[in-house]
Image (cartoon, rainbow, N blue to C red; front, side, top):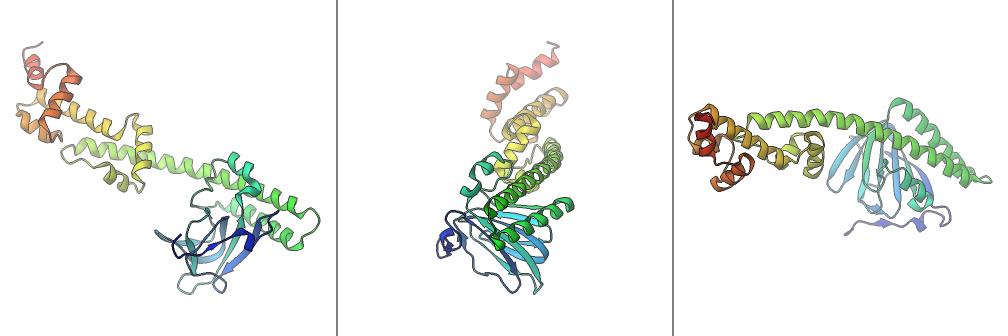
Length: 280
């Protein structure tokens, strides 16, 4: 964690019931990057604020909900002096460990940020009020009431994430198809996998997963197939030299091209053209 402070759950919570509820605002916030050994789920009720992470910062608005996994450095700050009200729910994963494992579509072990639908905003806010009230009153069996509301909270969050993922993946599918079309038109100057991933604003690893899912083949496999198909078409339809065909199909190494071509077509490029011209 470097110099960033790490808050321990024992300093803020009961060991037998490790949960804490707080309201943060423009007059009550910690501007210092810090981590904590417990899970933190935050929901912005009103206004806007700035959320800083080690790798950057995000502007949050009403209806945004996010989770901060243990030991991730972060902090909140007002945005241009604006007022904000943010609910901060801290708890140890052990409080609902089995439930969290079962609700696998809610990846609370890493940073997550989603904007809740209006309906979910309403329900989440009522649940937050219920948790706050039970923790403050400490009436008999309040631990069970808090766990029940927290369970409902996680169920709603899991459903929201599932819908968000389906919608996002649908958009990504179209973006992947556009990348595939681009590659077909620009074989002489293809995108690297990293460039293609940046084009749709995802990590290279996630792009590889999405691409394989949509195309049914890896990114490199798709490019290899495109190049061989293009080379075959140019051999049959033009009188271009092998060197010119290599350039147009995006090949940089002659030996690699000959090896791949013979593996696919069973003959060398020159034999392929001769056979076509002789009607074989």
